[in-house]
Length: 231
Figure 1: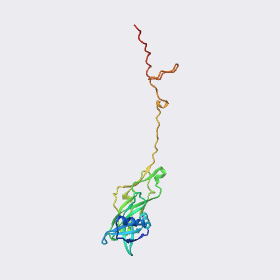
Figure 2: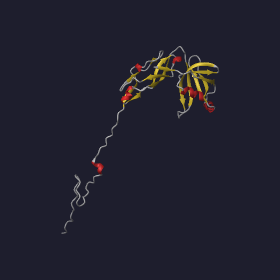
Figure 3: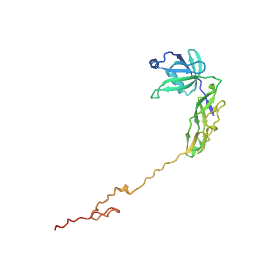
Figure 4: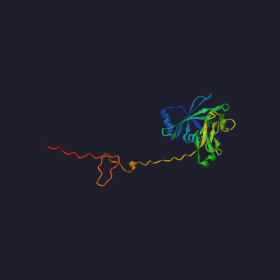
């Protein structure tokens, strides 16, 4: 398994003191994203970050970024991201300061590579978990982990315990948790039942025309009743 790490992103941020709804709306109108950084001895600090820079940092998939707050650099984790109701624009970002010497618990995406052997027998790869949870030192957090699935045969299963994690990462997931598996594609056969009704509705009680064969099971037409004779 290969840990993929990209160069850390540096975000320039400015402290802000006005945090009311009106001030936040004005900040967004200036194409800036409100944020907050907290943790360790620094306390909570409200920030303003350029919206394009915030989008780039969040969508890069990176966990760890560097905040340049008025010239002071801080190592932080992207702890939480809030979007608008359409989920199209970032409205707020929470950052957490980290101690480079203490492990943190993070979720790391899995990047599945290769074509399983079972695919040649009609199987398809089904991913049950696209990320895993690990304990790792902050500066060693990978953006993703590459998982080779070429060895998986038909009905083959990859468990969490089988992931060969890079040095410095400790698995939090249950060892027997299924990460992915190769399953056979089942063909669905739809049977169409042919019934007598397909030939047309059966009319009960209809008197057959002259020379026509009566329908089996049809009720016999009622006999003509004669008017009683007058006395």
